[in-house]
Length: 326
Image 1 (cartoon, rainbow, N blue to C red):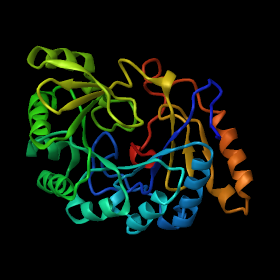
Image 2 (image 1 turned 135 degrees about the vertical axis):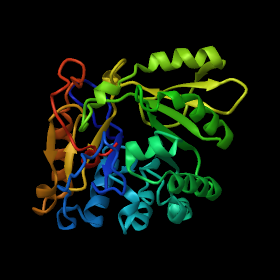
Image 3 (image 1 turned 120 degrees about the vertical axis):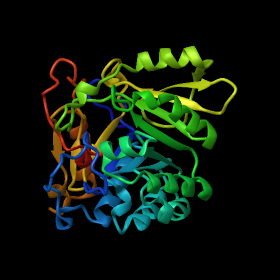
């Protein structure tokens, strides 16, 4: 069995692919207002190239993959892409992140194509707050979530970026919403990456405070959840609800990081909070053999840094999050 290990002994088994940097929402912490620097389709990795890279990663021991964006559902060939990825024998877990705005149309197709589970970004249940954050239509998102539920996609994980003074008053509402609909809920801390206008760090709220407040209202007990991400889960006793806490700032999880990210243009990002990248598109288009590409992937993983510097160097980089994927 092949394994990809970085210079610190961490096993890399999880690949996140941004299949487009475009999105139909404009979350302020992801895409700057007025941003027009999106990549052009002719620079994207083709479906054949993406399938080849995913296959090579899987042959090197990467068994879990998440399709992200931007908004992946705006890519026309996504259903075919999912079918191809899902047919790879060594890929055990195929999931997708979405803003749910197009799930009414695509939920059944995703289920049929082989997506095992989805993550949905939902930062607010209040129409005005939701629009302030995303410039999007909350009703379309809720309709999409109900379509995903009806199609049998499970689990459906709701990702809420908790922002102090903006949506933190909705935490209990989101808990109740997820209990009602049998969704999993994950709270995420803001990070100093890609923010524009009012800095995301100005909205930072330590999730330990959120967990402590929840413990005063609910009986919380440790829980596990299938997945490859870094969330620390609890279960609300007396319900099926599992709540995950993703804490890149207050309690970073770099020591157990198991993932790398691939952009739609073939840039391999080795850490969300560092500049280390490797360009794979030129290699793919130069006639390199599978063995040569595998060697390049192994060499790239050796460059993965030990940790991010969000705390000590919050201005280290500003990145358009839709390029790297969530």
